[in-house]
Image (cartoon, rainbow, N blue to C red; front, side, top):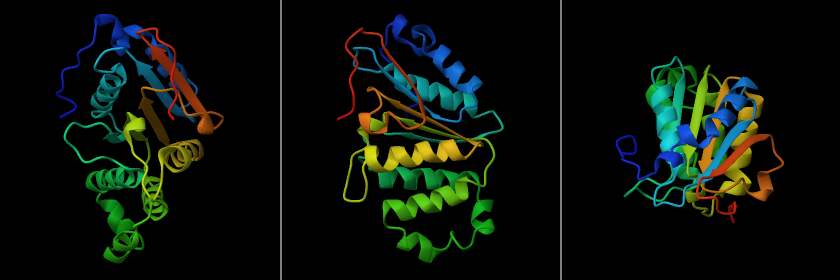
Length: 207
């Protein structure tokens, strides 16, 4: 649905014209050790960061890499929480690499999945299996649309784990987009942040 969507953006708003490509290339040239945070607004109904996420996914699909992606603001879909987001990544991972279930029977069994009801438990399952892969890209678009629940929130649970995972694993590259700058609570963690507001309004942060 997202891939086939038409974005209502002026020519200057598209990511290939607004200057963000230079930041993406710098992040890539520096080894992609830190996660890439791409923030931006266009002042229109649509935001250019989702178009960027879509094009990144399309560009990476033919490559010899594994791409896991979540669009947090899908029209008509169930509201995402951090727990549901990680479950979605885990499902994609197993769909793309079914062999992981056979390599890790201690993780991939009905009892484990049924008991993994918390964010922390589900994250540990995901990280254990994702760590087996070479050249893994995780793309999360519009992360500010992921709502907190009783299990976890974006600022104190999801983002710190993604940042730490990308930093510790040379084979993992993480890209997160938002209409905001990184929240203050994670701004000091290892991260390559870029923010471009083509409407020239003041930068905003996640609350």
